[in-house]
Length: 190
Image (cartoon, rainbow, N blue to C red; front, side, top):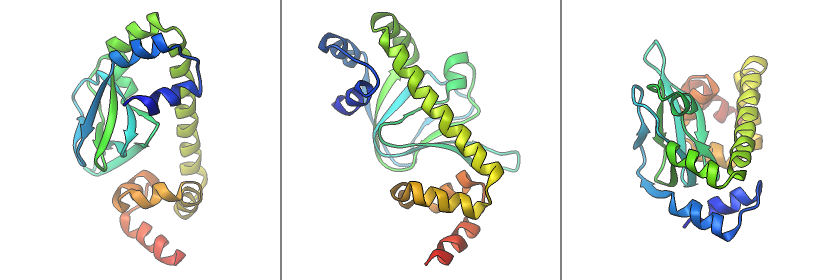
């Protein structure tokens, strides 16, 4: 059940079979329905989630009442609100499944215990966070350097399957444009 996650971890660190057993007995697998929330604004985030299959989005509600998608998480990605998770304070975000999904749940306290028992897990999560941070910096660079059209073209070029599976209004929100503008871009491509 945990084979995808263990394979992902082994891309970064070496785990013995004993460590794999220790790790997997501390984890939970959960099935999540489309549109189900793992976290809502105002709640304290206590878990980190590894996506086995499906897709999630982290979003907030703007001062104008619109949903603004900040991040997506697909297969072999970790997703959570790290600010709430680390500080133990209420989240300002929502974490929602965009399609039926299966995830591995890693509780914050359990993760801290595992860091002591399996020290190389800290290295793994550092590397994962470095990649996630780099992806966020790239996104911020695109937002401030590219037109909406160019952002869409780059995303469609680099992640075509991902672009196809995300509902248009969520993709538009992520790219900082209206669904109507995105629809015109897609029509122009044809």
